[in-house]
Image 1 (cartoon, rainbow over the protein chains, first blue to last red):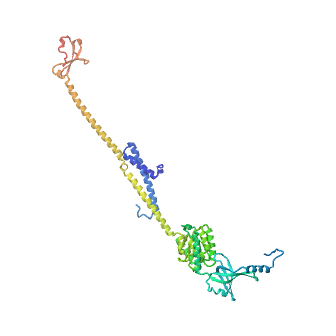
Image 2 (cartoon, chains in turn purple, yellow):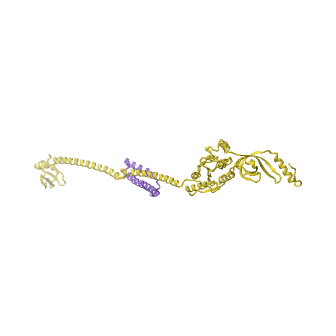
Image 3 (cartoon, rainbow over the protein chains, first blue to last red):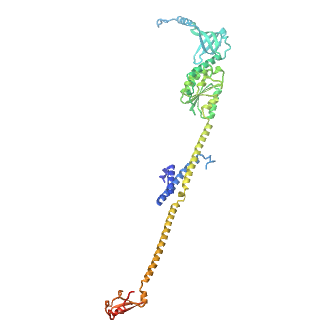
Length: 70
Length: 413
């Protein structure tokens, strides 16, 4: 996971997109599909961490203006 | 000139007579200046000091009261033109200009001269827009040239502080009217221009008479202001007054308060603006985050990611169908084989010797199972087996005859 931290949000998102597409095409072997799915889960988690972190920072920057966020 | 030396000096009387002789040969001349002092003695004479309007220089002038009476009453700092002759008083060795004629310079004439100067400076390009420099957004120091303890000074300082409490001033209190004004304002301007911390200079003065404001149209001051690299804000007199300084200033303020507004930003407004910008940034960030979140959510919610079991189930279904097909195929094969077995069994039964045995025939075999067909093939006393329709008998041969023994022997059907 430490190495994955270096992945930027865009890299993770693009890779996730590719993985979903190749899973949907169904051309991969079962073994490959499982590996792809696991990788996809991992990437989705990384993307989520990036986005949650960014949201937390913004929320911290504007403690007052809560009216229209969320 | 005299030939003099330390051994052969000229006496005072010779020198002073010579000066008088020289000056007497000069004719009277026309001189313009401001009357800064007027001293009417009890006798028929008046003494006055005539100052230059731009430089710190003056002449002592002597005038007969009857000549002076032609222009009286004179306002303070009156601008006059005199026709005077320089005279030398040998008794004390002093030079005086004795006035033969005096005229006050009228407003109309001053205005005409101002117009002339204005068009001259305009043709030189001193008023053109490309000469103007922008005012700093937030100056390190504000230079302020104003009169001593004037409302103009207070207005500038108070209004600037209200807008930007941390504003720093370099204030030069100088004469802002009268003959000293041009000299003092110019000196202050030079000093503030030289101060690198002063990022903008305000020259201000409250309202006054046309003559009071004349120093701010002085050619030397206007040229000096035009040459300054530091931005200059002029706030002279009221809106209707327009001294030439206004035209070379980088910004012409209508009032001292207006000048204060121009040189420093309003801190409340700045804070509000920054807050506005900050909110815009945050809103922008939030909306792009929302968009990204939606994208990720959309990717994760695709069937392959949301229910990864499909990876297995699709393949499981495939295997199931193979199994079914295999089972079906196998059952078919089994059926076919069963049917074939039945046929073979029936056929086998049809070939069985049982029916022959049922009809009374027997089969004779040696102990090894070999079927006897020829009586000659067995010696006497050989053990034989006789198979009947039901059961079998063990026996021993007693005799044999090839022909006779052939009868009860084996038969084939």
